[in-house]
Amino acid sequence: MMTDCPNKEKNFQKCNCTYNCSKKGNCCECIAYHNAMGEFPACLFSKEAEATFDRSLEMLIKDRKGG
Image (cartoon, rainbow, N blue to C red; front, side, top):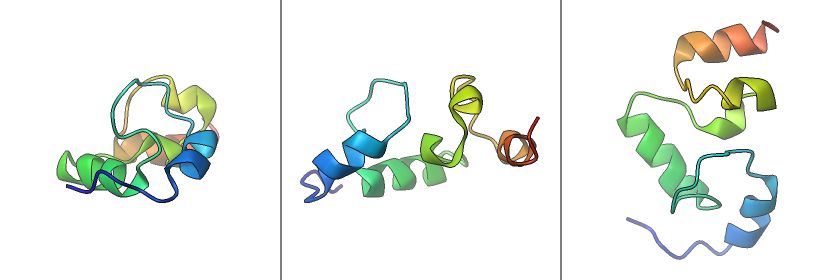
């Protein structure tokens, strides 16, 4: 598992995830984690959809369609 990301501070500023975890700003770890769980990372969702913590494909499609 990668723990030292050279872009962590830059990524952290753009990360919209409201869940407090050790992967925040470490995009490679975050994507790998959510992929292993069959989910999508928060950065693909709107602020409103991210707040539901539903990282499913169905929620992503619904969010992208606007509701």
